[in-house]
Length: 151
Image (cartoon, rainbow, N blue to C red):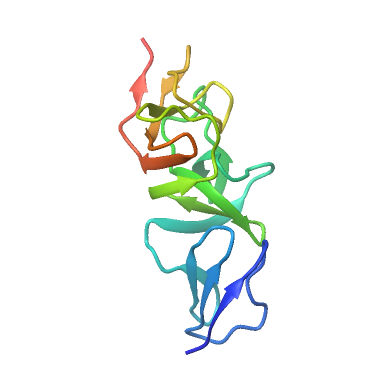
């Protein structure tokens, strides 16, 4: 079985079936099934990247495309983007994601009024969409929870 490391935003272009590669920026291990690269961990998914989705955004899957979660139009988040690999958003629905700044340790994290952006404050309007807990100022523990509709 071939193994290796992927750098930047690319995975090997001529892989063999069963090949394993660790993506350097996200730390995710991918396997090639003969047709596509897929994360080995089932709590991580790759999907189509919508315009300006980037690492740290909360996203919702709409018609097969990840979009920034918007509390005024969506009722849930499907995960948080860890990295963008070859134009696809690597979306985590569980686990620890680092690379944030300014999180409040111990606070809950919500999707803010700005689409895709996370905050420790509940949005003033729209749907309350919690996505997890702030482990440290730079690390989010993803825990997708039931949404709470504003009164």
